Structures are given as C-alpha cells and as structure tokens.
Length: 250
Image 1 (cartoon, rainbow, N blue to C red):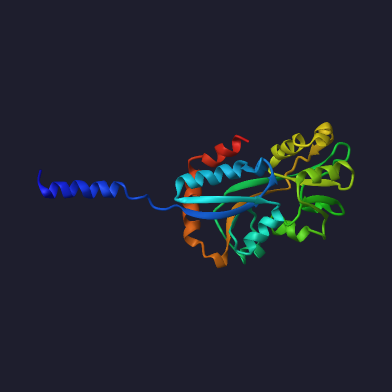
Image 2: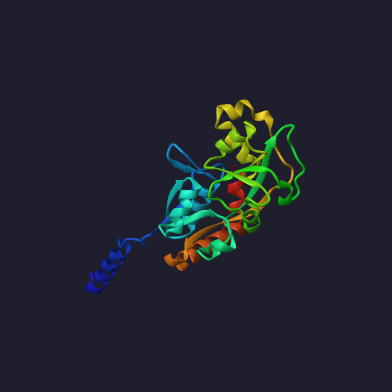
C-alpha cells in the first residue's frame, strides 16, 4: 500500500474524530408560575415558552440554562446582567436597558372577575376606580404602565393562585391572567379551593391586550451574535408554523 494513501486515510480518520463545535451555554431567566406559558413542576421547567426555547436549541448551537423564579426576581437577575430573560414585554423604559429578540410568542392577557360582578370592558379606561390583581414587577406595555395607580389600583402578588384567591375573597374587582383562558384553567385546577369555586370565575369578553413576548439581554452583555442566532431560529419557526403548533398543544 502506498504511503500517500495511508496518510490520506489517517488524515480523514483524525478529522472524523475531532469534537464538534462546542455549544454556547446561555443562561435565561423566566417566571416560575405562569402556566401554560412557563412554570415549575417537580423542579422542572414546563410550558410552551420552554418548548419554544428547546426548539431554538435544536436549530442553533445554543444550549439554554433555564432558571425560573418569581417574575420580579427573574427580571432583577436579567437587569443585573446575570443572564438573558424570556417572556419579556417591550416598553420604552425597558428598551433603554435590554436588546430584544424578534417576537417569541404573543401573550393574550384577560381580565377575570366573579359571576354577578361583571362589568363592561372595552379599553383600559373602563378599569377606572377598580382594583386589579397583577403580577409583581410585570409590565404589559406602556399603556399598562401609565394606567398603574392612575386609572386602576394594582394589587400585587407573586402567583396567579394568590391573585384568584384575592378575587374570590372580594378583595379585588378583577384579576389579570394570561395567556388566555387556558391559563385560568391551569391555575384553577392546580388549587383545591379555586377548583371548588371554578363556576364563580368569569372571563370578560374583550382581551385586556395582546402582549408580544421577547427574549432580551442587558445591553452591557453585548449578546448581538447570540440574538442573531435566536432571531434566525425564531423567523424560521414562525414561517414553518412551529410556534403556532407548540402553542396549540397547550
């Protein structure tokens, strides 16, 4: 056997045994209590946003270290540049802090009240003088931020279970729940007291708003290349219907 042939074979064997390009580990923070979007069960992240992130991993060389906390703490970690954040709404103030991805999903926020205490709702102005249970540290756009404490009185909590219990006890006029009625069903079925009173909750017909959710990184982290990979994956996932299919499963 000729020497050049042996050397060629050895070269290709060495090339085939070379490790693949190392995957980039990216820490991402999110909420631990917003089913069906994102929640913890047996210390494992679940939800359609988690499934979307796993699909992004499949389409890139990124590996996400997903860490779920109460939203205010998750946001604080991201604001300190300890990692990125997903499920992030866009506001003018946040755009000064974070670099945003393309839209990850759209969060339909709904107002829930008690049967017999329904009220007409067409815009945020219809909440004037009312108390509304909302997530501590959350935002759903600039209109929401401006209405806090001026149009309606926010009653903050860390979990939607607490929010619905407060509504059931008559301590608020309404509770802001999302995404969609599916979220309300998840929360009610997760708590015996709420489940026993499920027929008392009513979802108002008009959505509070449709809130686009994003992945964001603090500007000081300089994650432009990471966002470029995420954006390419998200674009293809919207185009081929993957995101719609994932959300429909919930």
